Image 1: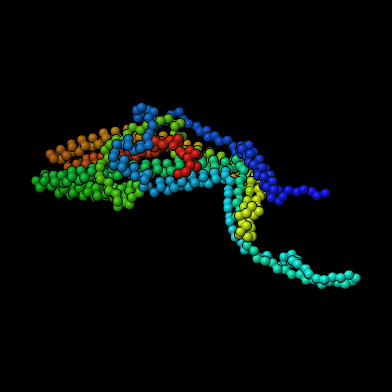
Image 2: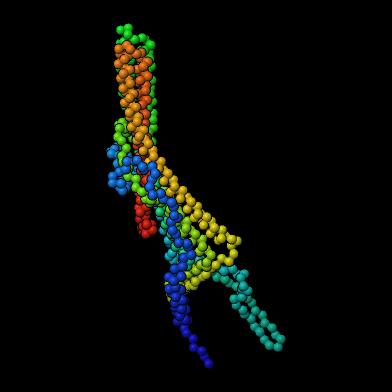
Length: 516
């Protein structure tokens, strides 16, 4: 009996159909299998938050009290020159540019990790010229001879003539690693959190640069005020020297008084000249902060005379969302938590689906014909049986790293509260000190007026005038320094409060994978 068989071409089609039906069935189960995630659920570590700032008692706050800082916080100082300088920080500051590039790197790494969720398809057409070795196998490719019966023998010969041929291939390969246990998804999450932390770091660098510009600016304005004071003092000392000379020429005063007045004038002139060094350095520092060579920036002189603005402080709990460095620490914590899920997934088997199809022929004319087809498809499961404790150690590493980020986050919060309290205390105490110093300046001026009048009438020596003038100058310089410290503390308080930033401004995960 003859058994009927399918034609070769039909049998091949059945095999292809069966293989792809099996592969389609496996793919249909992927949504169910991919629902597994062995990573721990993330929740922000609790921190102790005070109900109110202790040092806020007695501090003048902005009205209404719930007003929040705005993005362009420097505008509350009402100085157009400062506004123009601050606007250049975000554009030209090189530290900000570096942090922005680091954020773009972190965002690209999110896309790199997310790419593992999709199949990889490759094509590799090739032409190969091949000649097999003639020493492979027995080399018999043909025999010839004669034979007989009755003990007669035969003779024969063998020959091997391997040929050279050309192999034309056009393969398409596809591989897909099924994310059964959430390893890839957790890695994507970790990279998203890392990119968000990088975005917060960028804002922190930007805020730091803006605060440094403002601090240097008010240092420079303080130098302008000191220079103005010394200019006025030099003029007053010159008038006093002229008076002393006139009294000496009339015989009322002595040459010693003239020498004392001259010495005092020369000393004030030297102090006045020396102030130019610090002013030039502050101007150069501002130029670098806004991304310019120092030779390209000249800031006109304008003495510091404005009082610090009222700053909206808010409640301590809001600080967790308004400080970019605290937000970065919280995102670091979330990233470390996701990394634990990546490490846990290594304990479970991995499933890889692969398929390959294409065309292959030794003749170019038959390369793109149906009989030249080839294909293969199927899943592969792998599981690590022994690794010398590598997975356990890796999991311990990521758990310890998570605990470290929790401690760092809580320390960041404590430091943030400390800085706000420090600046509030500084502003409150400096305000009292400034008012007291202002009264001291008025008293010193009154003392100088009395000493000058008594000297003109010959009741007191010129030494009393010198003493009173020195006291007045010292008190005036201290008053200017206190005003400068008030402005610095105001800027530092704004920086400690986050500069009007909010964690809601962090880029979302969807924006990380979107095309720029």
